Amino acid sequence: MRIDIVSVIPEILKGPFSNSIIKRAINKKIIEIYLHDLRKYGLGKRKKVDDYPYGGGSGMVIRIEPVYRCFHKLFSERNYDEKIFMTPDGNIFSQKYAYEFSCKKNIIILCGRYKGIDQRIRENLISKEISIGPYVLSGGELAAAVVVEAVTRLLPGVLNNPDSMITDTFQIGSIPPPPLYTRPLIYKGLSVPRILLSGHHQKIKDWFYKKSILKKKI
Ligand code: ADE
Image (cartoon, rainbow, N blue to C red):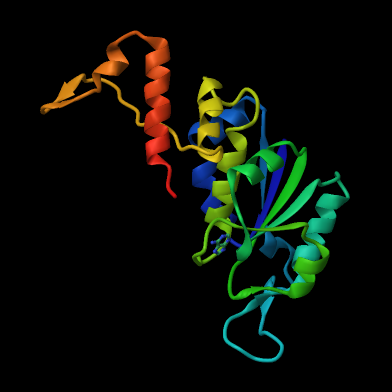
């Protein structure tokens, strides 16, 4: 899978992509991630990417030309299955979207900044508008990192133990994951439930199920 991320501050994304699961997926050539600096496609000597909003109001708006140029350069090289815009007023990201995106071959993610982007970009260059939650970040970069992480861990060969991905489905199904315990058996008087040491697989499964159901928020 290939992901192209377009941003005014692509440096923000270097950290999240050079560690842990994403780094491993890149090294294993399961995923390719390319960061594009929108400013490279900016206007004039100063590589301007934003301007004042028509009709007035505070804050700057990202102009269409730099985004159009950057996208069309990428379109001329390959087809994109999805062109995603990260924005607080988009559709709320969920595990369902993560599965959907993980099945695509090439996607572009555009990160917003400033007050927003020209509506003509949203209407003509974007196929999905995604929010990671009902709060406003200073830009879409950290939101894009969240999407990329959730998608990457679903790609075959990324997780060492694919079982942990299967149990993730607990979280998108009707019940939450059960409580988990590891060593030590007892810590400052706090002990692990005895049932987990019983060796009765069916009883343990039933216990996990019961605990999951009890955690379900209604
Ligand atoms: N950009 C700013 N806030 C955001 C959010 N909550 N989700 C996605 N992109 C954003």
